[in-house]
Image (tube, rainbow, N blue to C red; front, top):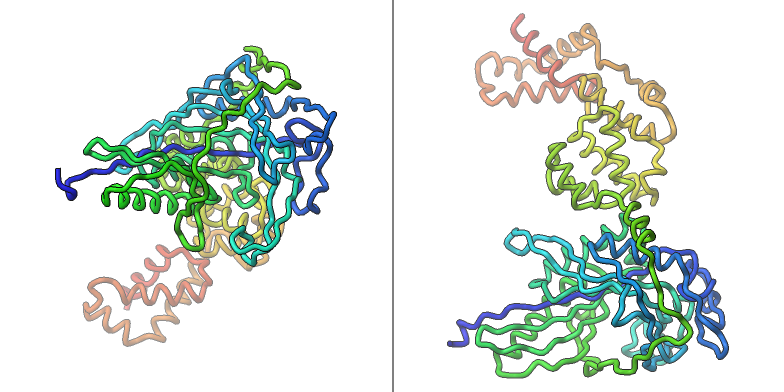
Amino acid sequence: MSEKELIFTPVIGIEIHIQLRTKSKIFCTCSADYTNDEPNTHICPVCMGLPGSLPVLNRAVVEQGMIAGLALNCSIVSPTLFFRKSYYYPDLPKGFQITQSDLPIAASGWLDIKDDAGAPKRIRINRLHLEEDVGKLHHSASDGRLEGAETSWVDYNRSGLPLAEIVSEPDISSAREAVEYVTMLRRRVRYVGASDVDLEKGMMRFDANVSMKCSDGRWGRKVEVKNMNSFRALERAIDFEIKRQIKVLKDGGEVLQETRHWNDAREVTRASRVKEFYRKFIVEPDLPPMIVAPDEVERARATLPEMPDRKAARYARELGLTEVDAAVLTDSPDVANYFEACVARGANPVRAGNWTRTEVLRVMGERRIDATELPVKPEALAELIRLIDDGKLSTTLAKSVFDSMLEGLSIEEAMKKGGVAEGGVGEGALAKLVAGTLAANPDVVDEIKAGKDVKGKKIKFLQGLIMRETKGQARPDEVTAAIEAALNSK
């Protein structure tokens, strides 16, 4: 087989760390909320691993881990064990990390995505296990990276935060599939409340294991790519690594099994170390086996809401929304609940979806609030949409009313403030506006009467002038009818 006929198939697995939503750390009572606090102010002998300190497992971590596992279609495992994984790095104060290994809390899950051809594809999840986070290194380099730094500091506020590591099977075949899988996973975990998965705060981090299968039977060794903290970085890093490995194999070289870091500024992966194997695992002697009773699993399962992908499919199937609109509306539970409450009050689903996707999300972004904090409640937006559907408000004018309602005004108060009368412009007032507009544009009127307005552009021109005069308050169809009636009467 010639070089040109060789086919290379990427084989990709993703390891994801998510910070579970709890008030305190996994093995001590230190607060898990350290955002914007001074370094090393949320630490104690337990999370610093000082002699004589003993870990105590946080029950809330177990509950959130179960909920996350169930959201990913995993089976809950019991009993489970914690282990000590020994390695030495400045951000690990104890010299070992407490983690589940051979006996994770959840296993054998899956998520359904679409492959690059748009066909359904199932990505299997090997396991979800609980562990503690490590500290965070800060470097003196101008860009905050280790490369070029003269000094480094360690902040242990993050040490001991509760993590769930989610390991997929190598079922992913492209960077695009990887991003879709990670996006789906993030949405599900956030939906069930197991984690905020805020990428900007480092609550979700992922590594990619990438290897290549060649049609001539060769396999490239697995390369672990680290340091990706956004979906965009994940996609670009995997794409780069696929191209790099293909070139190595085409040139007759050998892909080394190693750990590489993604340099986002230079858009390349760089070798950091030969891939090590953690063989220094021992059972954590200070923590007994963890047993989860079946009734606890069922209680956790009962808390699960409708999953976002299934909700989006229902919106498209039952409410007539496009797949894109349905995906946007189901991205977070509060937005989906807002939209559904609006529809439940009688709003047209498509129009309610458009308003939620545009105006509601716009205000949420500008004010940095969630949908539950929006001054315009779902029932008020439903009433505004009803006025539009009944032809009593134009869309343009409705947006002006909506902006006034954001100040806490009712619809009636917002309309009064803007000088808007429900029902648009009266017939008498509209007839006067039309007559005045026709009189001010005799050339246009003559061309229309001479049959030179085949596509109706000149009538639309007159309509636009009148709509501008009424500040969008008049109904477009009524304006057109009034213009045509006036022209026919002359």
